[in-house]
Every structure is written in structure tokens, then in C-alpha cells.
Amino acid sequence: MIVILKQQTNGEQIDEMVKWLSSFDVKVNLVQGTQKTILGLIGDTTKIDIESVKAKDIVENVQRIQEPYKNANRKFHPDDTIIEVEGRQIGGNSFNVIAGPCSVESEEQIITTAKAVKNAGATMLRGGAFKPRTSPYAFQGLRADGIELLLAAKKETGLPIVTEIMSLSHIDLFADVDIIQVGARNMQNFELLKELGHSKKPILLKRGLANTLEELLMSAEYITAGGNQNIILCERGIRTFEPKTRNTLDISAIPLLKQLSHFPVVVDPSHAAGITTLVEPLSLASIACGADGLIIEVHNDPKNALSDGAQSLTPESFEKIMAKIKAQATFSGKVL
Image (cartoon, rainbow, N blue to C red; front, side):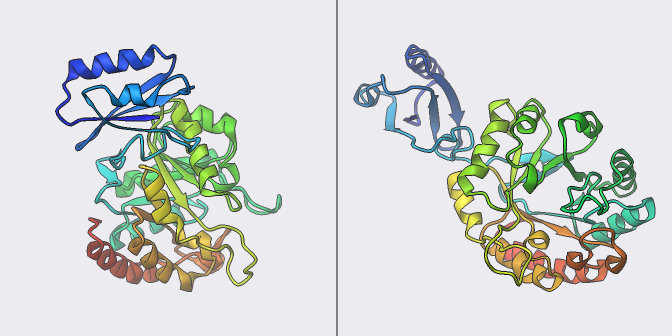
């Protein structure tokens, strides 16, 4: 249940209302937006008479919420969540491009790529230190050494780093990582999500390849339940019957997630398509649909990449695409 209060309500009246509602053994979350003040009630609200709540002088409206996710729900939090990362904002009117290789392979590779994507206009650096691969014989990443190389690239370029966590046992290694990515395969690793809920670090949560939007938001709810509200939702394509692309980018997920939740939404066109020639049109379409950012794979030598070379752009191709991304972002009212 949510209770929307009238604009002129003062602090003392709000405190009294919270105290009264709490007497029904429910948790009351206070959300004070720029336009509205909302009380979100979590728990068994069946004992609360809506008409009695509406009768209060300070109440504008009361709504029962059917969705099982509460903290991630825009009805509880009408204003966009804006996440601060190393002086940059994710969400609101800001637009970010996170770019870099699928896997960190060497110091030369990651620093060369980091410099190239920064010069092209990328705002953050991605790179996999731990790599979940379908085959146990494929390159699995440099692990802790990979994180150290990402930090070296950050020192060289100033770009905040984004990298994927695979296991609870690795959390200590991510102390200096700016954004922790939870990949599609771990979207429903609930023990990992619970632990990340105790962190204050931003979490980039990717949608599973066969998961619904509600399941994605419920995974976000696991993190918020632990107290961490710094979540970035990522649409990276879902598995369908179409074999021409690696996955099918669910473009409708972007506006839907923006309607359902207050968290920023970024799109991964590289994993969605698996084909470099589709990265540009999918990126531009994502911006037009309201995305807050993109995460794009760029490699200094894609033909010899140890993972996902077929979907990785060269620095030259990325620079050309970035010019169009900047123009589309500006046209859509975003600041890159």
C-alpha cells in the first residue's frame, strides 16, 4: 500500500502519520520527492482500512500495490534514482557509455583499449576479470590479476571501472571496483544478491537470458532488502527462437522498466546481438527508447580476442559510432 500526502504537509504531521500506520505492524518507508511525499507500507496491510486512511486531512490518495517488489517500485519512489560514481551521475538527464573488452587479457590490451574508448567519449571502462563461459575449456579470465590491471587502467585514464563478480568468495577482491556487475547467469544467485545488498557500491544487474522483467525487479529487490539502493538495471537480450542473433534485444523492456521502476536502465547491444554491425542501430534505438546508458564491447584486436571477439568493436569503429551516440543522446535530452 502507498499513501500519497498533500504537498503542504509538515514534518510533525508526517511523523504522526508514520507512527499511526506503524501501529498496524507494518514497515513504513518515507519517500520525499520533489513533487510528492509518499509513505510506502510493507507487510500485511489487510487490517488497514483504506477509507480511514483517506479520511486523514493530510492524505491526498491511497493505493494498494499488487506487484511483489516494493523497494524497486516506481509507485513507492516516483523520482528517478540517480547514482553517483566518481563524480559522474547515472540516471536522470545523464547518459553514460561503458566500454571496453569482454575480458582483461594483458596490461597492454586493457590500457590501450581504455585510452582509446576514453578518447572516443566513453565515460566508464568495462572489462571481465572473472569470466563465466559456457565451455569449461574456454578462457576464464585473469581473476584477481585482472582486477589489478583494471585498476591500473583506471589510474592511467581516470575512467571508473565496471567488472563482473562470480562468487561470494570474491567479494573482498572488489573493494576498489567502482561498479560491481552481476551477470545474466547470476541474476538469480540469491545468496550473492543478499550479500551485495549489504554493500554501498553500485550494482549493475543484468537480466537473465530467460527471465521476465518482474523476475529482474525481484532480483533487484533482494539487493534493496539489504539496504543497497544503488542499482542499475541492464537489458542485454533474451533467448528466443531466432538463431540469426546471439540473443534478441527486448527493446520494449527499456520503457517498461522505466515505468515500473525508478532505477536507471542501461542496454548491452553487444551481448544482445553478438554481431558488430548491429551494435550501432541497437544503440541508437535504445537511446530513443529512454535508456540511461550503453555498455559496449571494444577490443584493440578483436580478431585475436580470447573471448567474444565477434561482437567486439575496434577502437576505430567505436569512435565512429560514438559520434552518432552523442548526437542521439543530445536529441533525446540526455547529457553525455
